[in-house]
Length: 262
Ligand code: IPD
Image (cartoon, rainbow, N blue to C red; front, top):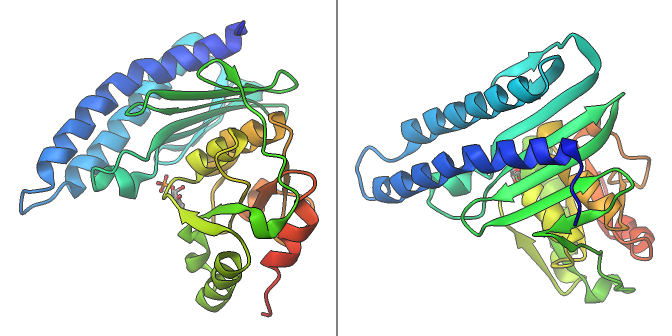
């Protein structure tokens, strides 16, 4: 797979900082058995990774703006480009020495997500996508599954909706569990979207998410031939934090499944 200069910059930056994230993970594993626990260490590791990733990106593309989970927004001199960063998506997993977490990095160009990299340094799985150039997992082209029936589908979701309305959240969860092959909650929305693009699940939904959780993942899905929508089937909007993602055939059935009485 021939990588563009832009994706080279992104992949190199992510891989470079991931090395220290792997060392930090080893430390977190040890801290599981300490009375103090890993909380403070994880908070500083998150900030350290973010700082180093920003340093790498600023060196490669000095004028770009930055929006990052912990550091917030920095307006760049180049108003057409903005990095969107989640230094550790799946922080709770990381804190519990569970290896399902990743670095998620996206580039927005003129208000549209143009490229994305999602990397789990523990499994060494690198997901990447660029607009109109497809999405790849460790250099292999990704494609959404071709399932036709929601009852045969494996659905991933997360607990973001609990920040909004717990009643709706649990009713939706029950429908998703009861009317499909099963429900998976992995604790990383970025990896959920990447794995959906890789055909490891058929559908993903969640609400209460931030743009840095899903910017790169949404591009993985659409470049693998999938669709994203609001939970009610309306056009997807990053600002809403609500997302339903699946293949083209399943989308109408999926939106129907997600409909709950308010
Ligand atoms: C979280 C993860 C998780 C989702 C949460 C997010 P973070 O992001 O994406 O899967 O359920 O709503 O906050 O905090 O680990 O970057």
